[in-house]
Amino acid sequence: MFPYNRKLRYKLVDGMRQHLLRAEIIPIHQISELLIEEMYKTYIHYYSGTNRQIFRSDFNNKDFCILIFNENEDNALVGFSAISIYIESVQNENFGIIYSGDTIIKHQYWGSNILIKAWLSFAGEVYRQFNFIPWYWLLLVKGHRTYRYLNLFFKDYYPRAGANIPENLRMKRDSIAFKSFGECFNSNSALIKFPETKGYLKEEWNGINEKTKDHKEVNFFKSQNPNFNSGDELVCFSEISPENLKKKSLIMFNDNSYAKFLPVNFTQKLKKDLI
Image (cartoon, rainbow, N blue to C red):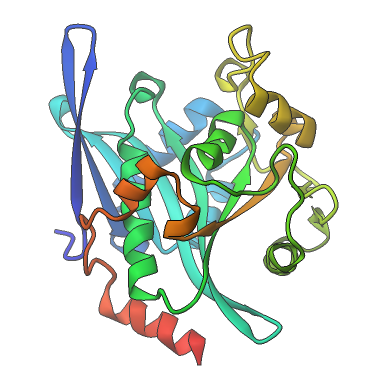
């Protein structure tokens, strides 16, 4: 059905049950309306302050989507992450961006790392096909669980406690953020504040509780984005390279599950943007 998709599988043991999860990465234009509606229903279970129009607008501007299915539950959709891939230029330097949009995985599957594996493997394939330019991950964060992915993946990422973003990275981040979000973006705080919220995690799912109150990464995220529960988004930025990845992440990054995945017409578009 999907000529460009690739699959990863992961077994998750939940008590006496074993779930066989499958990750597929599919071009946005190949995803059915029925499946998009299932994605939206999953999203609004965890997020308030959004609606179908906001969700579709964000989704339609992406290029690919990681979809997570449970094969033991009639291939039910249990999570997804929308992705954009594009070329930017600052001061005559070309560089690539992998931009993660709406992302959610149902709480029953939070012990799974299949989404992490799929993202890193896919990012690795993009990097290998275009490793003659630097690549960066652009991540808009409105919850501490997402923010903690950065520390899980990378040695250096921004913002983080005790480190100032280098000027060359700040210029790239700001160029992208201002182009995409205009005056809603503040370079000093790295925050995007929309006139009207585009969504925020429901209180029961934001993970701020007794277990996390003393967590270093959680507290830093809260200090940088104090109004996360109203929909403010923290613009995070990190270089995607073997040198900047932590050991376990590098293994997933070097996995070739998505070898030669990118459709030819899409790679041609990226190459054209480099000219």
